[in-house]
Length: 164
Ligand SMILES: Cc1cc2nc3c(=O)[nH]c(=O)nc-3n(C[C@H](O)[C@H](O)[C@H](O)COP(=O)(O)OP(=O)(O)OC[C@H]3O[C@@H](n4cnc5c(N)ncnc54)[C@H](O)[C@@H]3O)c2cc1C
Image 1 (tube, rainbow, N blue to C red):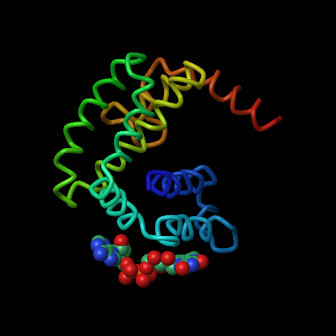
Image 2 (image 1 turned 90 degrees about the vertical axis):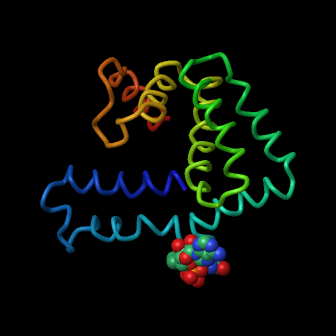
């Protein structure tokens, strides 16, 4: 679900980089933009997937234990992560009885899983940028990363990976 949201935002940002040409139908961009939300529609809509996750947790609570065990491997690596993990635990208790919270809780689960993997296996400056952009308030638009993020190293690392 989260990737779907970012996909739409990313396509929009790409349009803006190209400028006015980005919205002209003779280019590929309008089609890419129009089709970006499809990931949240086919193979089960985003909302239904979130409800399914709650259903699975309620039906077999052990799946949640396994999930929490996996993400908790990164506990103690970063205070921001630990705080969000604590928040998720209390929100999960509410969500198990309320479908209203499904999207918000599943979003947090997805972010925490990504953060956990990055903290354990990723480069520290990439993990830090991820936590700054996803676990703190007010940095969700492109280009709003706070000062101090090692953007140059992240770009060099990405270029190195694509060159392989
Ligand atoms: C490009 C594309 C390719 C596709 N390929 C395939 C394919 O290969 N195989 C296949 O089987 N299907 C495929 N689909 C169909 C796709 O799985 C359905 O479009 C999707 O499951 C949504 O169903 P629907 O279109 O009937 O909308 P609806 O089920 O009417 O849903 C509309 C909205 O209502 C919400 N909603 C529906 N029921 C509930 C509920 N009980 N509680 C809360 N919210 C609800 C949904 O989240 C959604 O936002 C494809 C769709 C597209 C667009």
